[in-house]
Length: 415
Ligand SMILES: *Cc1c(COP(=O)(O)O)cnc(C)c1O
Image (tube, rainbow, N blue to C red):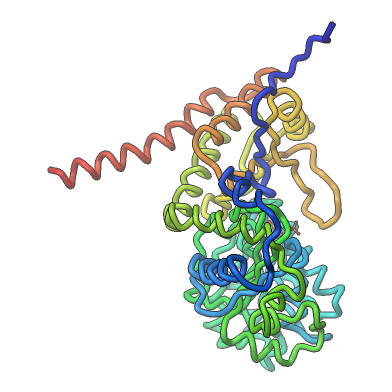
C-alpha cells in the first residue's frame, strides 16, 4: 500500500530561481549529439557566429572572449586583465554580488574602495561624480558596478553612472557585471561607454552554467597590456586573437555548451532582442502587481520600493519572519515549483527566512509565470498566511493590458 501524500507535483517541475534558468527544449536538443571535430568544421563556424551575435545583442563594436567557467570565473578574468597589484578600483554596490566581485578584487591585491548603497537602492551617480572629482591625480583605474544585483533585485541606472564619469572628466574604465540581466534588460555597450562587461551562460542566455563571457571595448586593450595580474590561462588577448581555434578557449573548447548557446542565440534573434527586453519588463510588472495585492492584506512587499530601481529579471519579496522560507519549501515540496531562497546581503552562505525571490528571466512565457504566481497564492492559502486577495488577477491584468494596447493600435492604424 502506498502512503497518501499531499504533494500534487506530478508533471514538469518548474524552476523560478534567478539562475540557472529554465533550459528550452531547443537548447537541450541542440546539445544532444556526438562529440565534434574541434579543429575544423561546424564548431569553428558557430563559434565565430556566436561571438558576432553576442556582440550584436550587447551593442558592442569591440571584442568578446569566451571562458570555460561560471560567473565567478568571469569576474576574476575581468579583474586580472585590467589591474595591476595595488591599483585602485571603485565599486558601486547594492546587494551581494557587487560586494563579492569587490572581495575577489581585494583577494587579488587590488586596492578596493566601495560606495555601498545597501540592499534596496540603486547607486547614486552624483556621489560617484564627487568622488571622481576628488580623485585629482586619477588614481582610480576603474569604476565597477552590477547592472542587476540578483540577491536584492536592485537595478542600477548604467547611463547615469556613465554621465558621472564623463562629467568628472575622469579616465577610469567602466566595468559592468550583467550576469543576471544580459538578454533580460536593455544594455547597449557602445552607447553606455562600457569598457568591460561580464556575463555568463546560465541566466538570460538559457544555456547550462559553464561559460563566462567577457566583452571588451577598444580602449580596454591599452590597460590590458599593462596589467601585471594577468596569467597565461586568463589572458584575454590570446582568446580574442587566437593563433588556432582551440586558443579561443586556451585548450579544448566547451563543445556542447557552444551548440546550446548557438541555439539559444537563434531563439533570441528570432524573438528580436527589443521584444525580449519588453517581455521581461511586462513579466516583472505582472510579478510586482501580484506582490502589491498580497501586501494589501498581509506582510508582503517588493524589497526595492522604487520601481525604477527594480530588476526585470528577478524580484526579492520581503515577508513576515519565517514565511518566505517556509513558502519556498512548500512550493517545492507540494507543487514542484522552485522559488529562489533569499540571500543575506553580506557575502557568505547565510539565507534569510523573511524573504524569497522569484526568478523571471530567460525562457519564460505567461503560463510559466502565472503558474508560479498561482502556486504562491495556493501555498499562502494552504499555510493560512494573511494576505490580500486578487494577486493572480492583478498579474493577469498586466498581461492583458499589453494586448489591449496592441488591439487599440491596430484599430487606430486601420481607421
Ligand atoms: C549569478 C550571478 C553571479 C555569479 O555567477 P556564478 O555563475 O554563480 O558564479 C554574479 N553576478 C551576478 C549579478 C549574478 O546574477
